[in-house]
Image (tube, rainbow, N blue to C red; front, side):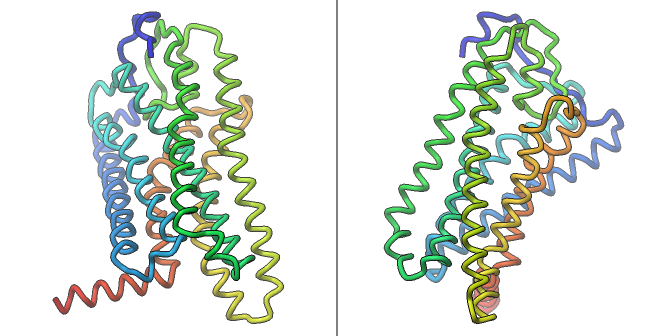
Length: 311
């Protein structure tokens, strides 16, 4: 990215989240606790689903992918955020900002695709149970997973490159806690209409379209569940979907409000709050949601704890 040839800006400065030292300490401890919970929770899911043969189904294969992604997703933002909270001069280099924005964007797109893949898996399992093993086999899971990751890696290259070849003449202060698209575009010393159009197009295709696919999948699932004559069957079907629905609602609710609301409704403080939800809160909540609302995961945890106690 050749942004340095067009601009004297060599680094960006972040607006402090607070000027009060005591508040900074509290924020640091809160974000650190959330980050550690995210790491431990997602590592727990990966280890449990790998060590228990009962959890080697496609649903848990995609869940392992999601947990691995969440670790990378939060590690792109939170360590630098923690450093900047206590810093008197919170900053990031030009290339560091470009790198952070690229990985944040690519992992975010990958998560949208993975959530859609998980919804499709539940659709086939509930609506076409007799054909499930033929449609969702190991080979198909690997192909879908690879497609999700590759999409995230490639799609963000174009908007990221276009943004960081814009001239940044100053000011270089980002009113945010990480290098996100909207606050960066406002610092550019050039017309950003093309960049905004490309970002909007990418957002619609790779955030809205997966969301619509998820909605269609769950409409079909709901229709199938309501036709079931057995109450036990209905409850079991609902329980296998409830965790995923909760995660999708948290993730998409904050992301769509951040990137697709009109400019007239834009607010910096609202943007920061929504960003905090999907970068810090959601990744922390996801392992808890999948662990506490999933009977198979809870049973695996009990067996693991019992085995550890006796050992």
